[in-house]
Length: 241
Image (cartoon, rainbow, N blue to C red; front, side, top):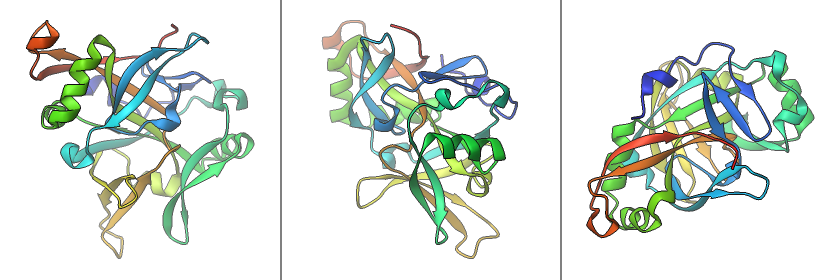
């Protein structure tokens, strides 16, 4: 059973970043093929020849079915962070002309901006019951999950890199509304009381996921032909193949 409170105490510097996973409060997040994942991505678990498991993304649970997500800033243990741990170039969500834009950054820039506090790591998550409802309410997606069998997975949480000022708007388990843009990107909108617009929207385009946590399914029947709905989702952590 996925326990949201187990993963909610994130404001302590105990997050350790490695090139193939991130450990947060004892829970290991995947980094393999992270650039292809978003909240609600679905697919099959794969083992790579490099002994790093990853999600083979095949589809997406519609954001309008998920509706609401929660977010918090993640404190990083900088004493254990190196440039090699960051890995390759990343996309950070940075305001350009006042608009949050996914922006490519090289490893050196990302490392220095992390250390200086200009960038923050933010966790975005879907409540377990909300994801169950969203999957069960998407018949074609549900059929695919059933057909993929024991390897079927869904992205329950993502970690994204954001400008520190933007990140502060998404801290402390704030709730955001999830939607989809005209270009099929996933968007999260949070109310900002002191903003002239009254809300702030960030876009999760390809490459903006730095790490992710998967969920695997418990069904209403054991045999594939008898399965009709998901009854629970368990967390599935990173681990070597």
